[in-house]
Length: 111
Length: 122
Image 1 (cartoon, chains in turn green, red):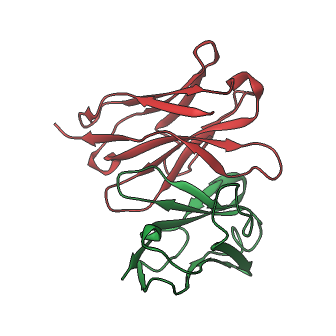
Image 2 (image 1 turned 60 degrees about the vertical axis):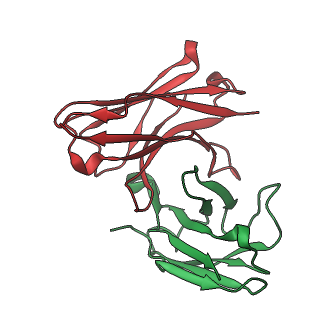
């Protein structure tokens, strides 16, 4: 069982927006502003999409945005495109014992 | 650009030791810019952080794996390695090496290896 909780699957129509939630605890998301989100296509390595909860690395579409409130982080994808169909994982720093914890992943289907 | 190339066997027998190596190019491990990390992903499941090492030589490990994991580095070859002892079928997974930034504002996994599927089976 993963330390962070994500919905196992979501579906969305092209052009619409979708938000993926990631629920942790006061020991991880609630304390550290070190939440990152990764996109993973089948057979590929994860790709960084968001870091520090809200920041986008260079080269990542502005359609991807992140937020954090309390023990929950969220990834929003606006104007969803077929290429956004992938698995998405949240990750949070969890202190000097657990260090890094991940969510179980959300499989996003573009209808 | 920074690239990570993984190598190691794809099949390990139960109770034996899993060993993987990650060769870093495009940045010197002597730069001290990164933690050198290992992350794994069982088939159809989520990611699990295994541990990391930095230039100080002090490792950090996932508490659930700490008794069986060793991460080491060969700075002369710009490589770091993972050793996982006493493996069972539960250790079957795709293993990734990754670089985690060490400085403020870079605390994330930006560079990843291609992944190695390691199957534990007799």
